[in-house]
Image (tube, rainbow over the protein chains, first blue to last red):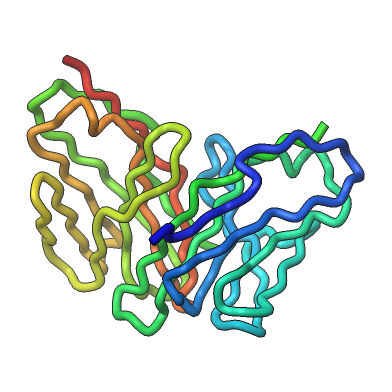
Length: 114
Length: 109
């Protein structure tokens, strides 16, 4: 069982380019999340999906979009990357039917926008 | 908005005890989580508190006081491998997690 996988592991991107970060989970969790982690700011929620076919905005959604066509995949797209989107991106999932609803994180994608 | 505060850094000696405090002000409360994150890695779940009191799990314990908006994570018998960042996270009234900036713990021999 792989848990959550993310691709790519790292990427250097020119400003203005379009980029999709991939996230796949094999735990059949219904909820999935995208966070960015910046030094001194902690993890901040970008977008989330409570179940396949639905998405919602988090704390810092501007410049990002997501889709949830099925249970397993939750890609994050930067339509036109800017340097302020340089960050480490973590995907997470949870079984929201559980009492604790613990979120489990993928290994992260380190993105640099020049 | 959410406000979650925890110290930036702490240093302790191998075998000692360290207590990491977390205070929070959030819109609603549906549980508090502690995660451990080693440098360059993903956060991993440590503990969950939703009722007041102490939850013990091996060398790690977590305490919650909802009336005070306060939690702590206690790490006992520190080992070198415990050097990491510890993240306090609160699930708010909308069931979204808000994270503190994290406390970097350095364990010295």
